[in-house]
Amino acid sequence: MEPKLNPSLAKVWLSCPKAGVMCAKAPDIETPFTLKGEALHLSAAYDLRDAFDIPQIPLGYPPEGKWERELYINFCKTLVHDILDDKPTEILVEEKIDLSQFIPNRNGIVDFVAYDDNNIIIVDYKTGFRRVYASNNPQLIFYALGITNYVRKKGKDPVRVYIAIAQPSQDNFDVTVMDMADLFGWYKNNKHRIAVATANQGEYTIGDHCSFCMGRATCRAYLLSRLLKSIGGTQDELDTEITE
Image (cartoon, rainbow, N blue to C red; front, side):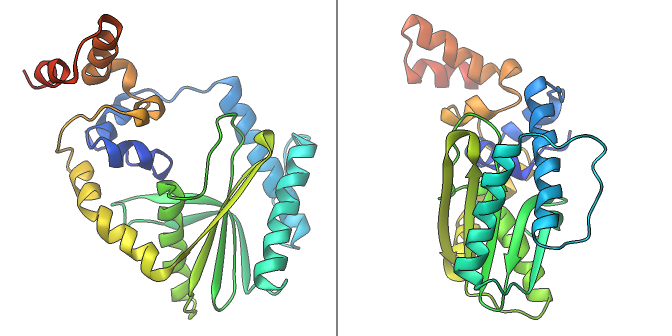
C-alpha cells in the first residue's frame, strides 16, 4: 500500500516512517468538527477574494463564522501591508501547489499566499482548538518550499518567506520567518527521513506525534506503549515487544 504522506501529517510521518502506511489504511471519517472546519475555510476564502479583489467562486450556502473570518482576513491584510507595502505581485487563495519535488506525488492546498520580488507570505488558517504554531511546522515548511518553486518559475528570486498561523478560535496569530538557506537547509536535513517514509522502511517510533496519527487505533507499537505505560512497563520492554 502506498504511504499517505499528506503535508498536514508531515509531523507524524517524519517522526515515524511507518505512519504513512498506517494512515493510508485508516478510513477517512467526516465529523461535525471536520465539516465545520471545511465550511469555515470555504467561507473565509470567499471573503478573502472579496477583500483582495480576486475573481470570486460563489458559495452555495450562507457564510460560516463571521467573527473568525474577520480576524483572519484582517490578519492577512496586515501582513500584506506591513511586509509587502500593499503592493503584492500576486495573491493566491485556497491554491493547489505542486509539492512533488519534495514529497513524491503530492500536492498541497495553501490557504493564503502573497509575494513580491523579495518576500513570500504564507498563512494557514486553523479552525481547531489545539494550538498550532508556525515555527518548525513541517506542513508549512513543505508549503513554503512548493510556493518558492512556484514564485521562481514566475521569474522572482525571493529572499525570505514569512510563515504564519491564523487560529482565531484560540486568539493565536503566530508568524515566523525563514531565509532561503534555512528553508532549503531544512529540506536537505530531512531528505533522508522523507525517503525512508516514502519507502515504508525504518522502525515504528512512539512519541507525542502519535496523538495526530490517523492509524494509531490499529498500531501495535502505539497500543503496546499505552498498555505498558498503564502497567508501569519500561521502554526496553516496549522495544522488545515491537521487534519480536
